Image 1 (cartoon, one colour):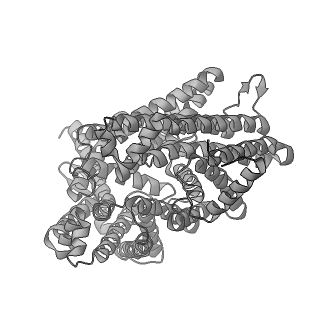
Image 2 (cartoon, rainbow over the protein chains, first blue to last red):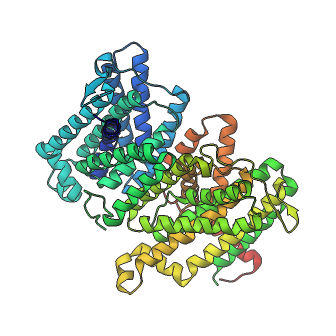
Image 3 (cartoon, rainbow over the protein chains, first blue to last red):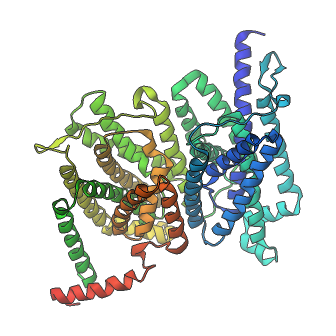
Length: 289
Length: 327
């Protein structure tokens, strides 16, 4: 194979594997938004929390898989507590502002507890060994992230389309009051979705902390990419998140290699271009006034 | 003119006189802190113009402030342009950015608007971080010198304070005039019932767009003051935490009135300063205050959540009696 083709394929692989991480990051965010209409501004802080807890668990000598589970559960529990607070406020704007305050506090406390040094988790050798596929050798862990993203994507799709909770969530997205009137405990569904979203975010943080490093500022960076992915893909749509993640991943990978410091303009341009033609995002439904 | 307005006017003039005399009896530190409170106040008022009068929660105000800062910093340091030229250019720069952001954000409503402005401002922050050859990246442009106006150098704290005070007062009066103008009234009508205003023949989207541009311009004016005060134009200014400060200031004061922004700006300046004297975790303190405000006082200090409202009413009556103003 020619070297141009190989370097092109590597860029595609970089883009797609980064897209895998982006999907994991944004799936919890979009799930919560879809049902509750709450933009979880603490999303980035939750991501960091998941990553740091997993890092600490691994520091204690636990295997990587246990560390990942630790991060996932820690953010799940945090979400449960935060949901208790968010549930006390009425209206999506006040709820969103509340999560903004919570994100500020959690982000600051994380900085206080874990300090400002960048930290990285070590995934086990089994998934870290470089893999030789279609003409080039590539870090196995990046493929692992892509596989994990696909598994999560399919799992979420099955959950939403094939289970009772999924039916309640989908109905709740359309008409909250009606679902409630049918005798379904919508508050419990909200809590479950919020916790599930938190666990996905915690998982994303733990995996992301093995992929990239954890450090100050990562929380806002994560919130931003999650926002861009779900705005492009369409708010509340899991399929949209997947497509948005692939677009952002590829734009980022190719942008960085061809435009270097102007890559951010390419990303902004993509966002603007999508919104110019579909203000609700690629898979979003028209917002109700 | 009813009593309410007259007492408000008397109160504001009294506050202005106190503010004028502030450097006479307080130290440089307090003067600097008040300067910070004032420009935060302009930023919070620019936020309130959108949130309180047009029902649009914008998290992009600090981007406009940073844009103004970049024009001044890059213009002065890299091109040696005079500040007399740069100040209007900076306001224009902020306005152009607001026109661009507005084009995108205007298509979104309510919670979507908030997300859109956040995404736009975080992308602008990204531009500041990554476009190193122009913006100088993370450290930004340090050492921006304060100019002279009418022969007075702004290098010392007091002249800068007076300049900020005058600019703040002018911004307040201009914005107050704006919200009471036919344009402002239409904006409030749109806030309350966009469909009705549209059916009455008003161009709803155009009014919302103009509000975004005007608000961004005022944020840019504040951005000039921020730049001279700090001497730096760095991307962190457009990052979410800075925007959070503006939102908190507006919410503490109350988003139903412009005055809430001024009050909130001053409170936030002093609160963060006091908190950082006792702990390095001042963001935790600020965030906690924010959470408490959203939970227990969503309408802010001037929004009537506290008995303060009744208290000021009786005070107003007394002042009115004292001044011999009849109802």
